[in-house]
Image 1 (spheres, rainbow, N blue to C red):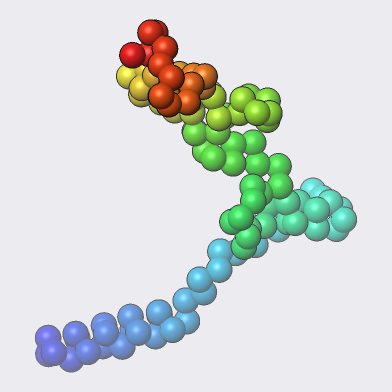
Image 2: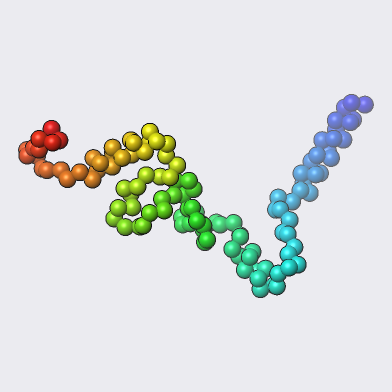
Length: 112
């Protein structure tokens, strides 16, 4: 009897998996015109191209997105999600990066 019950459960599970639909149901919006509904579906459709931010995406790098002006100094600002200690390390490294260096064998007293 337990073996028959186990077999029956396995068959029911296999049938359920075979009939399962992986796509979530599309919600029906009766408050939108067909034109607006098509626009909403186009904007909220999942992306297939991860080489660029999605349309209307505010934070393409998540919490690491910098909201500074995109110019030659864009990489001089730390990510918004760094801790205080990480911001200190970033500032120290950025200071070395932005420092005006002199060619060898010259030397400066401030950096020696």
